Image 1 (tube, rainbow, N blue to C red):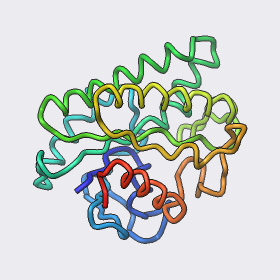
Image 2 (image 1 turned 30 degrees about the horizontal axis):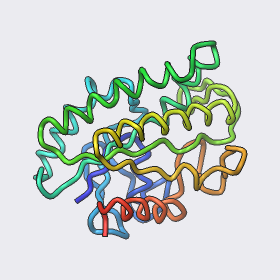
Image 3 (image 1 turned 180 degrees about the vertical axis):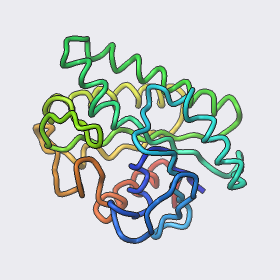
Length: 221
C-alpha cells in the first residue's frame, strides 16, 4: 500500500471534494482509499500543513497513523506530499521581499528532508511528492486562501523547490513523484483546466498523471 500523507492536497489521490466526488469529504486521521487503485490510500493530516516544520509538528502523527492502520515497513510506502503551501505563500513572500530564492528554498527543503531521513533511519520505505504549480490567482492575503505575488513569481519558487527536492531524493535513492510539467505551459504559467479552485487539483484530470509517475518508479502497478 502507498499511504499518501499531507495536507488537503492528498485528495488528488482519493477523489474527495473539492477535487472530485468519488469519496466523501476527507477527515483528519481517517484513511481514504483511492477509488481507482486498490494500492493507494490518502492520509489527511490537516489543513495548511507546511514542509518547513513537518518533522517537528507532523511526523509524529505520520508514525502514529502508520501504526494505527497496521502498515508494514517491508511492504508499504509512505509518500510525503507537502510543499505547495510553502511555495505559494511563505517562501514566495520571502523571495519577493528580497531574500535569495535558492537559499530560501534550500533552508526549507533541508528542514523538510529531515523528516524523510528520520523515516528512512527507522526502516520505513519513503517517497516524496513535488509541488504542483500555483494558480493564476493574483496576490491575496486572505487567511483561507493566501497567495503571495504573481503566478510567475510563485511558480519560479515551485520550480526551484522541485529541483532541489528531486536532487535530495536522487541522492538518498528514493522516488520523487512530480507532475508539475504537465500542469504548466511553455512560459511556466499554470494551466487552470487542471484545477477546481484556488489551489486544489482535479482528481479526474490529475490522478492518472500521478499514477503514471508512480508506475514509472515501480511503486504502483
